[in-house]
Image (cartoon, rainbow, N blue to C red; front, side, top):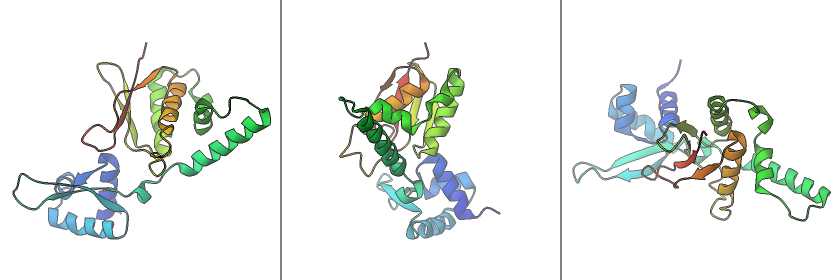
Amino acid sequence: MITVRQKILVHLKKTRAASAREIARALNMSAPNVRHHLGILVSDGRLEVSSVNQRGGRGRPEKIYSLSQSALGDNIAALADALLTEAGATLRQGAAQGLKIENLASRLLDLAQFNNLPIPKRLALLIEKLNEMHYQAHWEAGAEGPRVLLGRCPYAKVIDAHPELCKMDVALLEKSLGRPVLQSAKNESGGRGLCPFIFRVA
């Protein structure tokens, strides 16, 4: 039987962030009961308070909860393995141009499985693979074309020192979708970490 805390964790995995009030409404529970479980989940490191919203000067500020970075996981081990493998191949071949971001993206994602798939199936497979790598990704239709949204960066610990990893994300998307991709804006949607990428179907 699924416990209340497991239900809260599942809900936050879907929504990325929510207040106790929002969680209580979604799970049909009382807010004090939810706050009790949230306190335990924060103390054991599975959740964190990601922000605090002021509620128009009335009542206490509202805490916004999200899964902790340790609970979400990262993809740094896979990245390190891909980097070392690509660096070794580059050294063996004596390539003058050195390691390429495109090759690194190819090593992180097995691109052969995307061959000859129509765009809807490519998108579904891409989202599945990205989420295995802890991106919290989804896609949505848009006026300018479909958008792939990355809910978080699995390289957050190192991204400030290595912003070129964003170029690797672009290469990873372009190679799997077989279309040019444009990063439209970074960290939109109220600072909840969404990085949207747009691509053209035709």
